[in-house]
Length: 463
Ligand SMILES: *Cc1c(COP(=O)(O)O)cnc(C)c1O
Image (tube, rainbow, N blue to C red; front, side, top):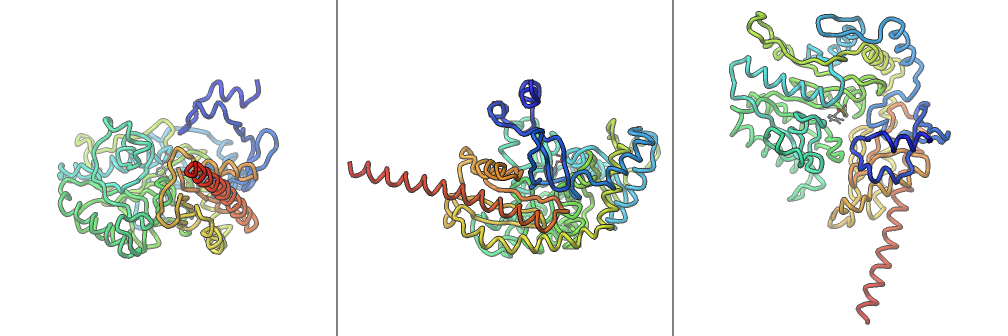
């Protein structure tokens, strides 16, 4: 039996309808080289979504490989419960220095877990402060913060979350400042102010029972790459302070250069009380996450042992040394390669191309925060009518892209572009060329279909 057949026999894949998978021509990725993925048949694909939004410097980066080897020469794993080790200590120092205003690093293994930890810390903080009623959370509409039960509770994506409804805790939901689909329409400033005033009403009325607001800053990723108007997150920071509500920024996707700055919140100097990091933390090499907390939150957990104020959370592989060492190497490469400056060039390069994309009649909206890009496909540019999810329009586009040597993964009708941050100018050009051609072919095949449909209708009318 070949590997693909064994996969279909033994494996259950995430977020996948396995009945379709069984029929698909699946790719078995065996190697990576820079911005490319190489399958068992030796075919090369550009990694257009950074191996699910996490790859930073490419695959098989000599410096990161070496760092992991060095760590392997010492120890692969030791517990962080009751012991400590150099890589975790030095990484924590680096993370705190990158985030002045936050002072403590709590490690975990995935973005979902970093979110669980932030929620539990926010809740427990208010318990220790004696404000026991402050136990609820506010989320944004469409939000995605991971797929464990707590993270799903603060999520607002019905497709993923609806079925688990009986298991979830209730949240307040504030509107997302989604300019393209704001019900009353209007310019970004109006949408921003509308979303802020709705948030303020929630806070004003309920702040006595709200522990924290959780959101992704600048852009909601898995929600469909929904960018936020300028001034939104700094205003959110002010509102949460005014109403004595903690602010959790989930930078699992936006962190580590993705939006053009090391962290998205820097762009509006809106420092949160809790910050979650994961995907790009190890350069996309190994599973590692972190929740950073302010000194004020941290201090509320200090006390005599018998007060039981400790934070009771921690997993077997918390702060795994190999992962921590990879993360240190990745952060060193940011400096060594001047990656944040290079990213600015790549951002400018992509922006030059959008005018041509927008001429394709199924392209409704193009949204971008740095190198986090969403192209929303619609049936009708004027009415903004969406495609039925069942049409799998995004899948149609990515199938075409794959045949041309580019790996993408859509979010429903939104084509996601998440280039590896270290991609060269030529690679980014290729990514955009293939994406354009794939959308254009899909667009053209639909209009042929539409034309035929209308001819048929006319004929039947005549009969
Ligand atoms: C991916 C993601 C998560 C979940 O991270 P995992 O490592 O997949 O558990 C949480 N929040 C945001 C914003 C994400 O993009």
